[in-house]
Length: 104
Image (cartoon, rainbow, N blue to C red; front, side, top):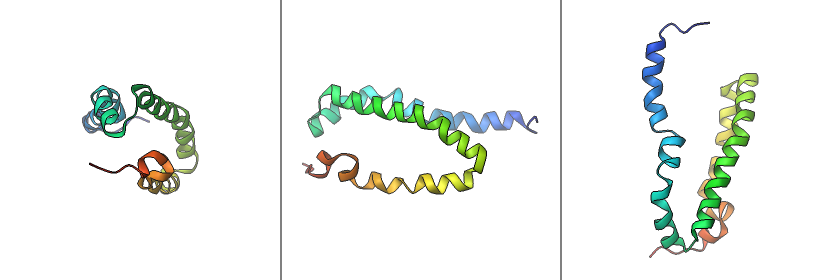
C-alpha cells in the first residue's frame, strides 16, 4: 500500500535521521575519545571497544526488535524495552569503574 503523502513522510524523516545514532554518535565519536580518556583514565582501545560493543549490540538486536514489533506491535514492545533504561541510571550496573569515580 502506498502512503498518502510520501513527500511529507520524507520531510519528517530527514530531521530524525540527521539526529540519529549514525549522525550523532558514529560521525562525532572521535571528538569524544580524548575527553573520555582524560576524564576516566581509559585507553583509546578501551573506549573504542565500548563503542564497538554498542554498535554490535545494535546490529544484533535491531532485527530481533524489528520482528517483535512487526509481530506483536510497538505498543507492547516499547514499554518492555523502556524497562531496561533505568539500568543506565545505575553506573555500577553498566560499568563498575564509573561508580567509584569522583568528579573533579
